[in-house]
Length: 256
Image (tube, rainbow, N blue to C red; front, side):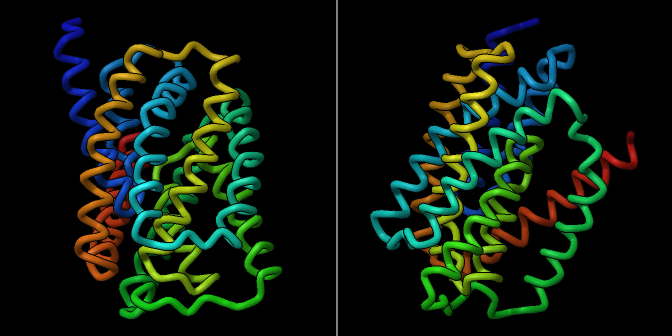
């Protein structure tokens, strides 16, 4: 195996993953298949762990970039992140007992529903209509954090897209505020998954750190572009990424 070429290819994949993830989530769609293609004989849990190392730096950077221009709704972000920590920990633990492929049919159906709803509702996420009740906001954020956190620790692709959609649909956020909130929760899910994987599976640390640097560069570029072009641009990117996720999951099901 030509490790120089493999590392270069995975670095490029991590850059594009960071860019896409910073805007609308879905970076795992690029990064995870690239890792599995490069290391087909490696244990899946080991590659998922390496992916988390590569993702967390870029996700945290994107959150910082957004926070400089968009106020973080901490009433949702803080309780949601704490719940996501718990959900992702148990999701990562579940990988050892259940193959992630069992989720593919369900995730495919959910993504089709998300895409259809977003496409039909032309004004979805273009304007903020957030609820005033802090208690309701916290309760909804905790439910989202637990559910999507578990999914991210267990499987992962599309986590950011699901978070953004749910924050818009249930809490009335616009795309930019939903994006920054999703980044805060995504940092928490990555941190929890890494904490579990680091002590229980082999992590490709050298590769993970290289991909993290590339993911960081992509995340900075993506978040700046999203902030420059606003919510309408993020909505279009969101629909595009969800469409690609649907195509990828459908292909995996057919090819299986």
